[in-house]
Length: 472
Image (cartoon, rainbow, N blue to C red):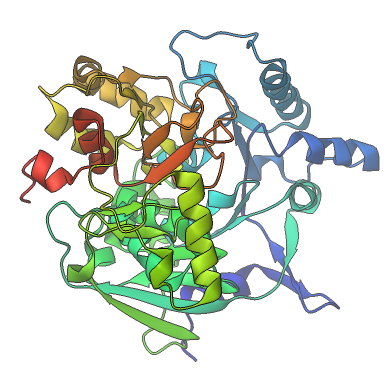
């Protein structure tokens, strides 16, 4: 019987059916960071347990790390300092690999895993972070989990999970110039809703995903959770294998050949069952900007901010009114032209090498607008080192961006990078919730990296296609 990748990976990792209907699932790879793991390690000690398979767990520090160049320990924030020390001690005690800053491999967990070759097709991957769905770009079933589940995986290498339905999201045709992977996922979330994926795994497919690079696929899978989906994945193919070949934790020699054969076998079979299929025309996707307080409240750069008076349902009207009151935006006004205070380029969504390379092509010789604070934060030390070797960091610095060290930075502001007051930020990150970027009144507009750059150099939300004459 033909099966989807999700079903194949699930079946391959199912240990047993539990009395409550859930499945005890073997987790092949476990990723941890400094924020959600300390309590889990504490639970282990309370129970007198050890880490069952420490070689399957990898750690890095990302959320709380200051990104100002040259910052050293102890950190000024005592909580951040305590967190990194706890992670270091826990990894040493239990024999877990820790990619800390001194290794040159530190960075955002969802960027480090792929670039080290730890993320592989056909695997089950878990991490105490909601954007773990990123790793599904490789044809893995990747799950964001809570602290209790982190404890369970450390102790047993398994966790309990209810089965998911599978929705195939096909994007066919060719994207127009100036439209990027970030626009694709914002369009999908806008179309299906922030709760549309509840109970689902999303299988992304079609012409656009076939042509996407691995980093573009990661951007889309990263934000699956913002559409309510627990899992988002792309079937592995030659693009996947080429990306992984030669990476530190990827198989070598004869094992590499065997791995490719195994990875190919996990791809969804022709004619397999899907619980739902959604088809989207790539030509319908435009550069997209959020205007509200969740990632589904987005419009194209040429559209106007919704007017609650035109809402067709009471709950829709209430939702629009709440968002506009917080965002201090006018109903019916164009989103284009809204003045910004901050431009943030980074995060596990768009802090990869390709993001900085693409923006650098267009901002070379340009200057950040007066009054705008612009920061560029590579997602890992690996990304930073390549950018520096290519002179990309200098392109950003000369344009007026602050070039930072690797970390989550202003995506969620559990570090010194925060909005102040009601500043409006053009951001390449993944969430625009109230207070997300560090200020309880700070405001976030999500958009692609090039759209962030366009906003930075003009001082307002702008159409990057016009600002940079994007034509291919």
